Image 1: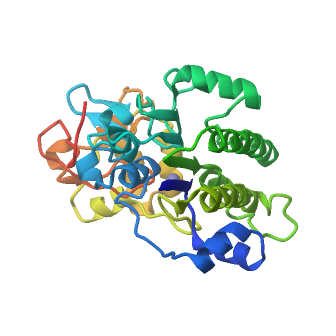
Image 2 (image 1 turned 180 degrees about the horizontal axis):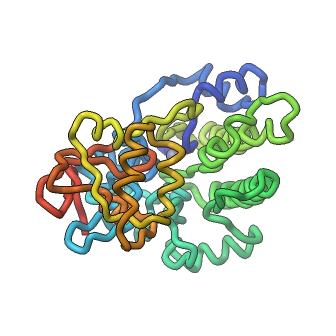
Image 3 (image 1 turned 180 degrees about the vertical axis):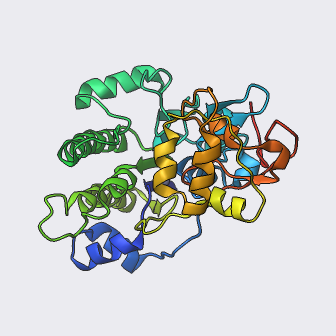
Length: 358
Ligand SMILES: [Zn+2]
């Protein structure tokens, strides 16, 4: 029996249900109606590379080893990007290959560099711009690219990019991804066909406020990205019905509005767990961030004491942790998005309190 897995990054019923009710996702609607579905918990932390690796290995982050986007090497004091070489558990396509099954795996986050699997693979989120090692076999990828007129791994959103430009990029990536989907689905009778759509995640990051907003020219961008996935679900269902197989839709985490921010560092400081030091420079880029987001009490303290030294700050979390007076700190946090806390276990040298690879 064949298995078709359609991944929708950041899929949420908050968006899906109203679109289904409006008749805009007919294939997903059919799956909801005729199949079974539910709200599942994500991994801890609920990040794309972490959760997708759990989906593809069946293992928890502590076991498969992908715990974040960035790791911290305690020996060199530098950050590094997690990639597939840090994954410590075989993914499902490797297991399938061991029993002679052919897999086609496309755009799954954190699959770069790709595995030399029994089948075909293109990596997803985490593929460097140089693109070397993004596909296996590379020759097959080149043939496909030539045949469908190019391929984009992901959309590169710059922070201050205009909404119009980003929407154009989404549509460009969508067009190529759909062509790639059709090309590969019909290429051979795969035993496992695992294809992930990531535009949904990207679009929700950019256009959440615009979604369904009256008078916004971008009100439909998120819906379009879900419709891209819906179309693929329809194709996979038709194939499964014709040739025998099962279709699954999976997602790594949900999505929602960002209404408030909570500064874990400030809170730890207020509880006497974290003490900042005075090594930051006066014109540190972090100063603006602190002025804007840190509560008044801690802000005064940080501005007064932190921006005094001559040390440069480049913005990496490894350097951010130099904020901290390790002699007086028991627990700290240096992540912008995910509320990790770390235990300070050695003087002068923080250690992440979880799986660490170098
Ligand atoms: Zn994601």
